[in-house]
Image 1 (tube, rainbow, N blue to C red):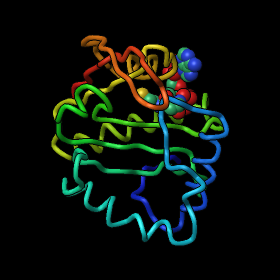
Image 2: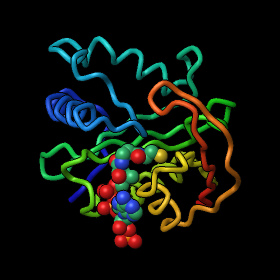
Image 3: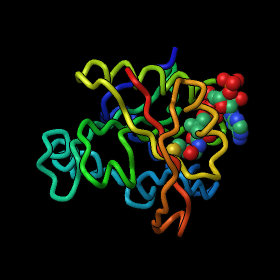
Length: 174
Ligand SMILES: CC(C)(COP(=O)(O)OP(=O)(O)OC[C@H]1O[C@@H](n2cnc3c(N)ncnc32)[C@H](O)[C@@H]1OP(=O)(O)O)[C@@H](O)C(=O)NCCC(=O)NCCS
């Protein structure tokens, strides 16, 4: 059974394998941590940063909660939730980020991660979430629309991994 769990030392090796797979497959729509940075001390070295993000105390970062998706001990993917709506959320990263490692895609995990993630968003008192999706990301567009995403508009965007691109913005009402 798929679960979304908070980051924890027990799954660091699984997280690293997932990051490696994402990098090896050159997934541009969601960039996790560079696996080369994940060494024995990585979890506790980075923990204060993630804690500050949750409290909205990380400079230049929206309030963010990071979850790992695991199934029966296997690392599957991740889910990120941003609970406020600064410009970075509205015009760039959206309220939600999700990814499934390439070897586990197409098995329904993406849908389950989003379903569980929307429950978490509700639990945070959110009434709606914004998803921002590259216009060429057919899998994510399909998934978002199948979960009730309502297209708002398409804006121009640019980042290192995706370059200049069109970004669709969708609202999901919770
Ligand atoms: C988007 C992503 C999370 C989907 O995960 P997944 O586990 O493959 O998705 P699922 O198996 O749950 O499929 C969900 C739906 O999308 C459809 N789908 C999957 N891949 C598709 C594709 N390439 N094109 C069109 N539809 C696709 C499935 O058929 C399914 O539709 P259905 O419910 O109508 O049957 C995954 O492709 C991924 O991690 N991509 C890279 C990171 C990313 O793009 N994140 C989102 C950034 S906005």
